[in-house]
Image 1 (cartoon, helix red, strand yellow):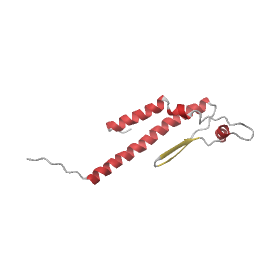
Image 2: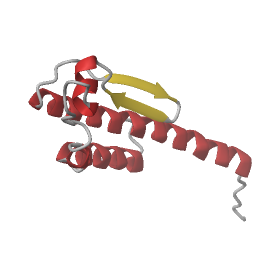
Image 3: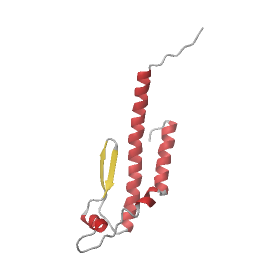
Image 4: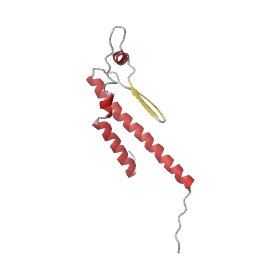
Length: 116
């Protein structure tokens, strides 16, 4: 008796593409949530209290601040010199333990087959 296996490469590649899209969306959401949490802490420390704005498309997450106080502080006004809060803090936020933990947790779940 001879055992053989037959693969439908088209179906297999569609299955992989579907898994990749699911992981990509989950990764974007997970990292965006971690980034928003870290930026909220920075904003609170800097005395800015308006909530962050969030927008999303299929392959992008935008997190920022569009309140007048944040914009005036970041870029300055005719009466006030700029005192940036976002740009100086981004490297620290990106390197933060919670960002690393979020991406590590996501990678472990993706590799183990568990859904977040």
